Image (cartoon, rainbow, N blue to C red; front, side, top):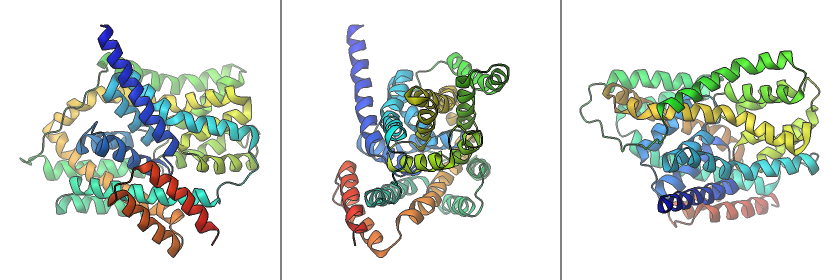
Length: 397
């Protein structure tokens, strides 16, 4: 038993170290995070196979909440159970939470969004995402039908930009995949994903998710506690968002700016700060909470906005293997995985490419960084450092 506990502790420590390193270096938003995860967890450490990772990404894209954070939690769960998911989340999220609480305290009025080193990190995000998409496309869109599904996903993602676009694309791709591949006799077997979570625990998490969504607004209406109102606002924002952190920003603005909790200038200053730090954009909630109620408010806001992500991923994962083993569902997943590639390609173009590659210098620098990462096999953290320095130097030209 002591040996088992020691091994579990070592495993959790490994997850914490790796996820913290990602939390300190993963710039560029949710799509870039999936690229960093793919490079670290799949290519380098081989904690999952390509298709298992794609299936997990598809599940998290299907669920509301911060998809990249949920993928990180899911990988932690697969590696070391519920504690592994929590540790993975803490490592990936805590650096940006601390940074944004500090920003809220002392740096509200400094403009960061146009700093040269940040622009360099955006170019790094282009490189990382491009590399991840090339690897995923090779494995997940091997035939013309799946390439066509990916193309449809690209077109719809770019031309029909609504809150529910991604989930609609995934549903459509699942239907097409079901129609095309339900009798496909060459469906590859997936490596079984280990989810050490009981079905009972999963059902409790799902019940708690919906229960809080209903109960918190009622509790807010019958009490005068500002902390309850804050928790409700952040919890609902985290529960009802599809498409990543950028989608939650207008929701948070509607929740807090009209009520006078913070003014428009403070909100925009915090948005600039959120762009300047690595990790999930949902940690913008930590800044808002800290502006309203100090560091305690920042921590409460962080817990509230990410709690739905935990409840949903813990609730969905134990049923995922059963779904994936079903031949009919496996056909649908082939279509969904192809659509995920298309969604990532669209996100690579907008907002990552359009906000990063603005000049010939930017493109040339991206080509150099891509060669360093893919051909010269330099580690991602080296690419991040070179990207930041290079972005600053380009800004001086």
